[in-house]
Image 1 (cartoon, rainbow, N blue to C red):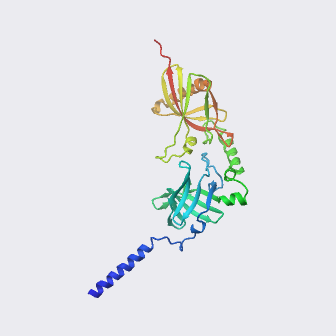
Image 2: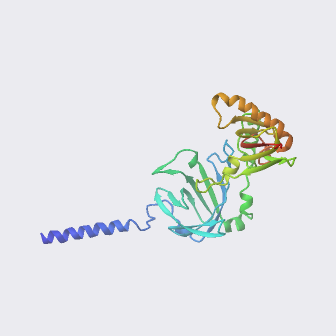
Image 3: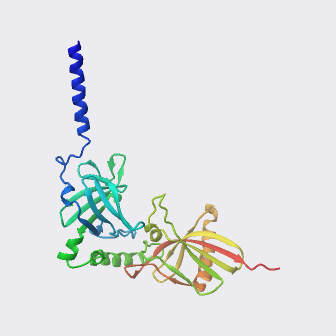
Length: 308
């Protein structure tokens, strides 16, 4: 029995050592390894959907901006615009070609001294989402490759392509035919006051806690318009389309009963036609310099003259 006891201890110890060994970095079973490109600094030059475009139909634009460098097989450094320095992140190997760093999951598609190609993927639980959230490809070029071989700059390579321009031109031509359709403008509509009795405030929708990035500000633009000397006090929040010529078309008024919706929509449209159009220069939203219909949210406050 004593002999069997020591044999059991030996088996347990051997099993434990094997288990601890699996926790160390083992690249032999991987298709790609990061160690060979350690110390090379890469800049992101392209971020595209699978169709090769930087834009989708809703107007969301993929903007390349990352700067990364492999510090070790399990450590990735990335540039922090806020701290103005490279920060280290744990580079966790998941399975297949899937890695995680900086709170994002990436599928590695290519690694070389000159370039990297990652597919940004959305992971829910242990499953990779197959929707648009995983439809993002990121291409990085080494800084030396950009400078010495391509003889250009990352900023130049990051510019939208002719295919992007063609897509926006066609998309704009389609939505501009109807006053109730539009897509997000990377340069949102502008309201420029022509009178001192009005004020405009563009409300930021960026919320890092809720994972709302800077793109929310142009995807879902919100404006607060204050009109002094109005015919009466009022407060409305409405969804509207600003067309390619600067016209305002109220789509719906929020926070009203269904039976009042039609009348409230007419009221707010009248406010837009009488007050906003006459007291503001309204500039349409544009993408790549092309004006097009875009949807916005308007919060309109009217303040009547207080009479003694």
